[in-house]
Length: 213
Image (cartoon, rainbow, N blue to C red; front, top):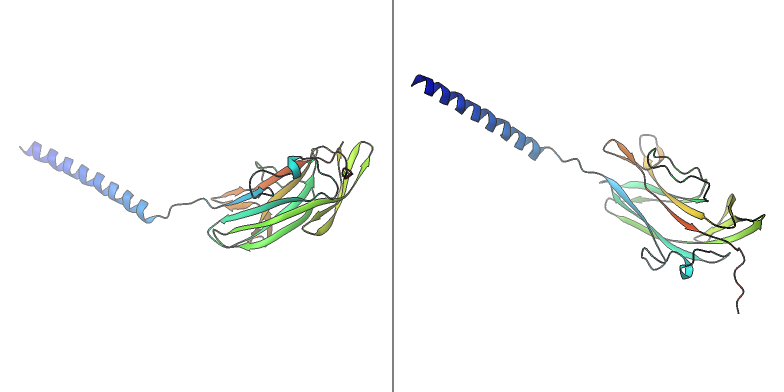
């Protein structure tokens, strides 16, 4: 009889210990804030405000002075106000794009940038209207000399492409880092550095626009 009583007490104690551990785990999960991923969304839309129509007449071959309209957008999902900058770069097939594994920017020089404070959950979207205002053909290569963006003209540091194929505009998202007191490429979340960038290819096989009939 005493053996059974002792066994019952041990079983009861074991059950109580298990229940105590389970209750502590439930309390911990209920009171500990969940770690949520903080991130940005970065996009570019065509002239019709859709992910289509990026080229006039759907033709990626751009002529001098031909206007191209896109819309750049950033969504802040970082839980706090953020100062962001979109850097615009002109590149070609030989210049490397950003490296996502190493979180490195493209070595192509920046032409200009757009910066603004964005509230949490806010969408910052604006038109990006551009045209190649001056270009020349030298020895089988097309060289872009000046680029006009939102009515501002920028000198391009000698970017060329063989036969005018495979130019590209690269857009990089830079975020203000309070620790370094400067912009950094990408942002930090959950101990990792994330980056966001976009690119659109275009050609300029003949700088001279076709003659009007």
